[in-house]
Image (cartoon, rainbow over all chains, first blue to last red):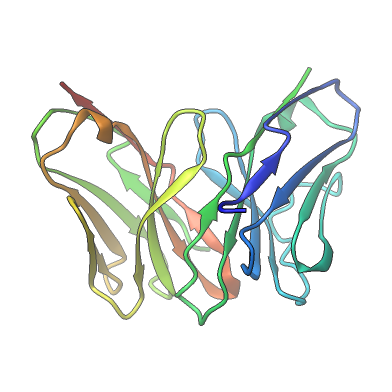
Length: 116
Length: 111
């Protein structure tokens, strides 16, 4: 597609349920990022994928959060046993290949998660 | 640990005014700095990217400067318009390709 695509755009779930959020990056982009944006807050880094390298998971807030990227393209962010504090907008970004410093980030519209 | 600060947190100006948004970062070892715009309920739109070896970038009415040694960047918006109303975020790319964001400046341009 022309841009980064995220689904679902909105998800309402009950506390304790598992959720999966999907990100389809721009074709040819090798880098993929997940961020979380809580109401009125800045963006919190969650995880970063670059090609076939091991992902940088240093931003994942707990072991209930995990992400995978299949075939170097689509990524799924999974939140297990959701809590009310997980309510936020989850943003995905991708970046084209290139040397350090050249990677412009392109964002999707986000997935708004509400945990009741 | 890299920290990014944006001042002011909010700004209201009359249409036509030139304005400056500020971004500062604590660690000068960055690979690039990027300015974004976010409209309510939307994702982020990239405005300008300045690589670490560059001093400024321009796009239309926007000009961004970078002073790596002092840990500062400014976004200059000329002849502001109501359509410029949005939240503006700056972000720096650090080691390991991690990109760290500031909390943003909420801009309101009054017609």
